[in-house]
Length: 161
Image 1 (tube, helix red, strand yellow):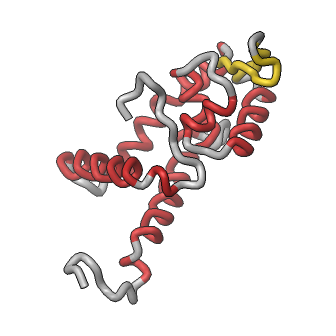
Image 2 (cartoon, rainbow, N blue to C red):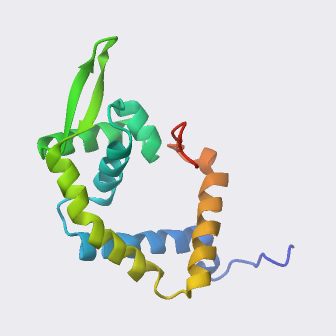
């Protein structure tokens, strides 16, 4: 057995369990710091839409790393809230180009301080160098295992990811 493995008798030796717990903690801090106007997934979709205006719904879901049915539901909710608009793409009447509204842009702007506090709180147990190392390793873990996801992330052509 490699020295990095154990018998995994303790649940807290399972990386998946720790990642799930970290996600629970992250979501809890998200609502503490960013309020309940948007869910974490709605925030991610809106943030990606702001960076990629005019993107169709399927591509936006892929950029966010969520399945298309979840993407459709999230976009519908954001449209109901007046934070995004859907417009027919003339070359493909079945697709809709999505754009963030002024209210959506303002919502994201208003959430920047909360997002900064969220990051600081979540990473606070780590030293500065540990934070950088953790983010680098977490990014590597996600990127290298991307194809194992039920909704693999499809980075944009102009992205560094």
